[in-house]
Structure formats: C-alpha cells, structure tokens
Length: 242
Image 1 (cartoon, one colour):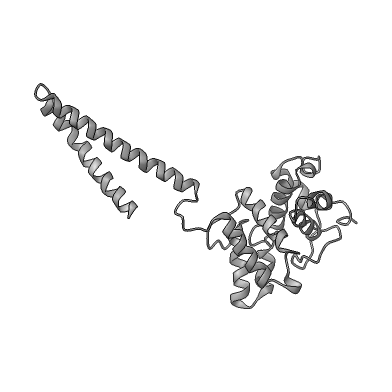
Image 2 (cartoon, helix red, strand yellow):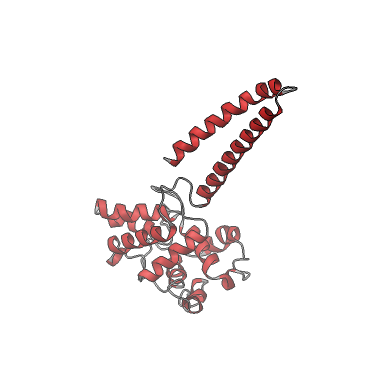
C-alpha cells in the first residue's frame, strides 16, 4: 500500500515538473503569487523524492527487498536444519553454540548470501544443502557442503577455513604463516594443508589435515573462552599436526 502511494506521488511530481517551466513562463510579469504556489509545490515534490530516497537506502541497509530472513533468524534456521538433518557420520558441528558461532562469523564476513543459493561460500548455500539432505534422504550428498568448509560446493574448504580463521582467530591469522591476508591464506597457506578423501566430519579432531583445522576453527566459536583453546589448533598446533 505504501509503495503504491509513493509511486502515485512520484508520478504526480514528475508531471508537475514537466509542467513547471510552462507555468513559470506564464507567471512572469503577472501574478507573483502563482509563482510562489508553484515553487512550494516543487518543494513538496522534492521532499517526497527525498523521503523515497531515504526509504530506499533504509531498505538496502536492511537487506533490500525484505524477502530474506533477518540474520539472527537465518542462523537459527540454518542450525536447526543442519543439526537435525546431518547427524552421526555426517555431523558437521559438535554443538548448537558452535554452529551459531560459525554462522555469525560468516555473516559478519559478508557471507550471508541470497535465499536459494546453490553454490558459493554463504550461509544460504549451506542452508540449502542442509535442507536438501532431509528432503532427499541423502546426507552423503549434502551434509559435507552444509558444514563450515562448504565441501567444494558452498565454497572450497580453504575458503571456509580462511574466512573463519580471519574472523575468529586474529592473533594466529596475523602471524607469518597467514600474513594477515585472506588472499595469502587462500593461495599459499591453506593449499599446503593435507586434505582427506572423506568429507568433513565433526569427529575428525586431530591430525595434520584440513578437517582437523576446520573442526577447531569452528569450535573456537562455541563461547568466549573457546578461542584461547582452539585457535592455536586451528592454526596448525597439536593436535592438528604430525
């Protein structure tokens, strides 16, 4: 309703603008009060346009069309789905707090994404994969991608790892190993970390491999004390070492 009213006002203002010059020509040397009225009308239309611009800017800052969920609601929805639909050998989070922490870090890194994402390092892509695990009954095909690493569908494991390490473990990320650079982490540090043939599982908590590091960089988000325990492991200290 508000949008239709705004469009109507905008159309009226545009019409008034096109007629303005003609009216002003007629007003010259005649009735100056007419000029005043027209100028006031123009001022009113400018205000309406300003209100519309402000509304547009507000909508953009709140997520554009308003069709997507709020960030807090999105993380709750995502964690509800992935914790319910990816369990046992396909579990990708040790706890709900860990899941919520990872989701919030992705959001803060600008990785919210768009509803229905099928790929890319975003929360919405991970939600798509988690819900697909339930709807298809095929957790093997979807749960690894629904986890923190993205399983080469919702981003590569290196993309998930490097973004989360940057957000969660700034002390470790600032060392020479990562050069305090996301690009350096993606192109130099992470590719040298051994991978495992099996997809990520929250039970893989040791060994010199990307799965161990993903587990610990995720666990570092469980609570305020967790980074002190898990960030060194996430950066490659034992138990994520040979």
